[in-house]
Image 1 (cartoon, helix red, strand yellow):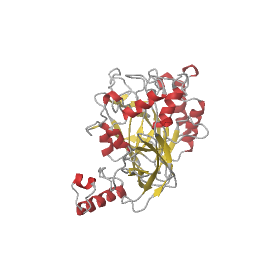
Image 2 (tube, helix red, strand yellow):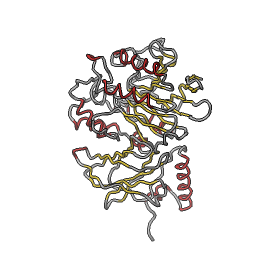
Image 3 (tube, rainbow, N blue to C red):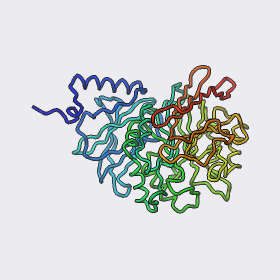
Image 4 (cartoon, rainbow, N blue to C red):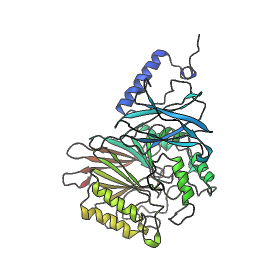
Length: 442
């Protein structure tokens, strides 16, 4: 008699149990809102390590990132069916030492607002455990969007258990606000292999579980290259190459070095991901550089999203050096442009400063910034909660943000929550978009 597969005996499942589990995971996949349940795969696992992530998701496309432990030729199988009765396959790709055995594989012609499962297939090895993500809804789709946001993960603060908490809220996606590694700390990275090693160190089991169950939009800050780096730092090309190697980012054509980009999620949400590092030049008083600044202003004018979310690795509202306070002319130009053009529904999200906060913009009472983190790094005890710009201030514990956008009804709203690693609610803000296009905090 053929023995039961190892995963059945390990879990103590009988065929009736298995049927119930399969129905449950299917139900969760359809609704897209159930808490994640880790189940064994229905096939023998490949002996090849398969670290997975999906990024830069749109309604019809996604970038799969994968890593093996040695050179392999494989492809990706993907499906909308949790039972895998039918699936599609990508072309075969090879992982090679020159990219640290990583690969980026595009998935195209996807269905909007749909959960997909994907897995690797190595010839002669069987397929790996499935990972999953949700595609973005079309821009006229009136749908609720939920995502998590945070930054700053330093290797010495592992385990990254807060990422397990983030996983349990079942986000549609994760916005990683930068400092995804600390390349300049402990043993500072200087060559490409050093940077790769920093990324490998930071993919602990909690990070891997989060990336296996939702997509990510990653931006960088300074520690992916060097502390407080600007456009003249000689390590930029190496750090940038490593960043592209280890994150599922769609490289822009014709400028393959570009990191700023925008993504639409339904009727209500558009993300504007800024690159606040490789173009910043104190001598020219610019953080974004002229091309990126003009891109941002034009994209904001063109956007029909109810809520336009500007993602900056460093805070606009922080008056200090290395933050937007070092570039007040450019900051004020952007803020003044929003007022002059009557652009409504703009929200500012930032990280970097190792505290959670609601902070007023300089000289403004009605425009605020929402700051998150760190996920896993030392807290900031140098900034005082007594600064008048703060409406909320927390430097007591690591934290992440959960953003829920409700686009329907007479008063579309954004619910912003700060949680710690124990899923304790630290603070919340509810913003309602009224008929006069003003954002009112409830």
